[in-house]
Amino acid sequence: MDEGLIGWVGLSLCEGIGGVKLRRLLHHFGDVSAILSASVDDLQTVKGIHPPVAHQIRAIQLDKLANAIHRWQSAHIHIITWESDDYPQLLLDIPDAPPTLFIMGNSTIWKNHHLYAIVGTRTPASLIRDKTIRLSDAITQKGHIVVSGLAEGVDTAAHLGTFVDKNGRTIAILGSGLCHIYPKHNRALADAILERNGALISEVAPDSQVSAWGLVGRNRIITAMSEAVIVMQTSLEGGAMHAVKFARQQHKPIYADNNIATGNRAILADGGHDLATFQI
Image (cartoon, rainbow, N blue to C red):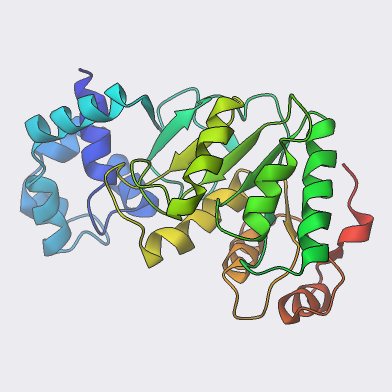
């Protein structure tokens, strides 16, 4: 097994090391092997690498991790890192890009395609749900890819809309590990995405259960991979507003359906584009 891959996965799964800190470590030490070989004291010379993080790095068990990676790959999970030519370029461009991505399905689906994110509440009005399906279908009819988060409501409608066209494809970004699809009752939807040459992607270890951190963090991946972000319906307190925050940080165009939802009103009042002006 590629020792470099094992090291990449080990560092990316260390609690307290994200894309920003790993970039600093790589800049200081040169490569993953040198990071793993560094002493606790040397690791702490890098900004943000405090004693607990340094000890975590030193505690990485490469043999144990190699067994886990073999098990994941046997379950048809692809693993790509920043060093891979297949890593999504738009995602790589953000400072906190996940160092490692775990993928089931088409691991190059984003290449040579335009990606558009569709997000929103888990409890949309029926009219919004139907509108989401039609929009998703229209996007895929043009040969583009729809990205969403596999959640109930708007996300589910966005994924389902890609099924109308026989060639439609979609990407689901998970807040859980790929071995623990969340929500569980969307397991059939996840399977259908894979059957239609789509992809499931997560930045957390495949054996990981869902977490609040994972659900929030996946939004930056959804928005970063996409050329524009479309909000169908959300309250000001809704999870979709995390996607809006990340999209603004990433300077992505944000479109919102012009409805009475408090989040949608706020997006439009703060410079967001009316969905009626969206052109595929």
